[in-house]
Length: 270
Image 1 (cartoon, helix red, strand yellow):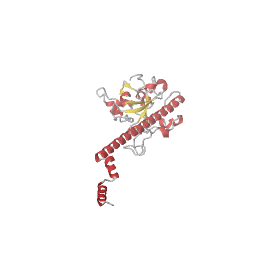
Image 2 (cartoon, rainbow, N blue to C red; image 1 turned 120 degrees about the vertical axis):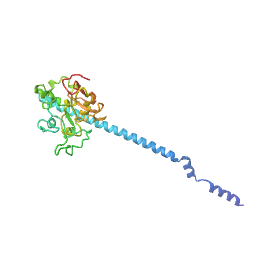
Image 3 (cartoon, rainbow, N blue to C red; image 1 turned 45 degrees about the horizontal axis):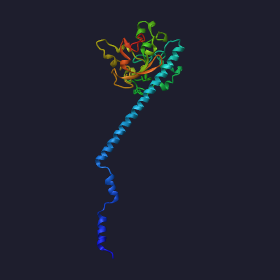
Image 4 (cartoon, rainbow, N blue to C red; image 1 turned 45 degrees about the vertical axis):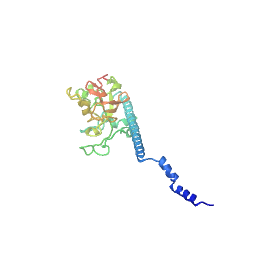
């Protein structure tokens, strides 16, 4: 005989039993605190990932910049060999009249440098490729790289005293592996449109030994690779006469007139 009490008990148990899915949610689901922790961990991992990607991309740009400098050094070496050892020259001004006919920028393409690809560095953040340089109407940036003026016939401080003393050819360079040739031009200011620097202007006196990195930063983008501009620790890529390229802190490129890698008369200083 069918029992009414058994039916009632069964129905009560079925009503009070929690659904299986709800039980699983309570056993396996996240609490609010756990969810917040998970979100925080994911955010941290994403931040680390973006940092790593950024570093990898920057290092790739640094490598491309070094490749550009090697191409320029190789092209200039070919020019020097073809010119019986004589160097090209700098001709793009930083405020005065330019001399386009002697500018190395207009010569190198004939000696193996694809200027459309190598004169603009992937590290270059200057806006003046497309808009006129401050204070001008028609001067634009045309190269990321500049020339050590000690190697120039027209801008060398030595040549200004005696043209015969210009270190403007291979035979007058005692240690080509220690003399900087190409460097990154500053991204803004009057030198953003020039193709050379004036190293002799970086030194004031022994009473101001910390002035060089500040003064040089008006001409050179000393931190194009890393660091803070106008500081001794700022790093950039530099091309040397012998063709090799190095990433140097400014303090390892220039300290004073007697300790630097720009003046060819100094054979070994670091």
